[in-house]
Length: 360
Image 1 (spheres, rainbow, N blue to C red):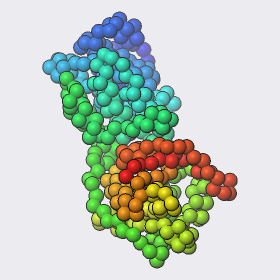
Image 2: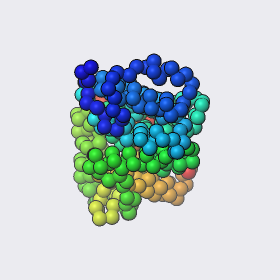
Image 3: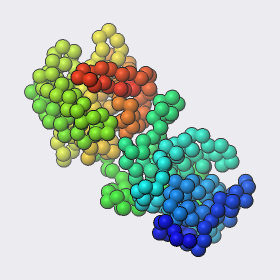
Image 4: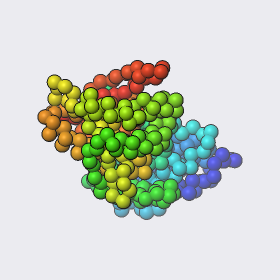
């Protein structure tokens, strides 16, 4: 047969087409022979130009609760790196679906046998997908996250569960796949936690906020809102005189976020709603290169402390429904969805958001 794709380097070499019937013939048996058959089938599907189905075959391989002393695992380790390779080398024009959403659904709808182990293997695969695939092109299922108040687990949580549940070397193979992926993408496998200072500012420093906004928004929001809406919102909300009016009329706080060695790296603003116990965060933005270093979490903690000092018992904010990285960050900080809200902001534009809340 003339294969469509060259051989997958992390799967067994094959000399013929493998069929689904070879997998279904095992029935409910999940042993070393089944595992190996799944890997052969995954290679066949990949070479046939069917990467989405190849991924499904590797999912089947991960349904096997093999022990570390199984000889097949010495020759063909658990296929986390094989999955990462497919995601990195996805051919243009070949259907791959949305693997990230697939693993989210799989992890949250898993059934027995070995439900818990297979659930955390699915989350581990989903984390790999999140590291590799562009988030705007391959988003999570925000509707499920909203309806079920679902938050994708952290890397450390996945690692802890794999270490506790795996009868094989899931943790080692998954971490090796993550490190290999980081190398392929030319980036560090883990971001260090950066030291930062957050300080309230007066009107005289609002031009710094304006300058940061004009760097951050064009880098973060394309694909979420239109370039025309980005320009409009920057012109309306980020002129220093407009922000100064917020300070004067609504007692809005503005603060700069300064990362060690980088200077001003982000900003935030918030206000206490009159006659309520609500502190509302209007703005919280970081330069893209500062994401993933714990600075956003530190800014939220700082804001929560200021809100308590103001006598507030709840933090609220709005986040664009398509901004899945921000939604994930807020969920991890303890925010929950409370309502959908769509607001006309003029000039033919709307803000289509979730309102989220965190008790203090």
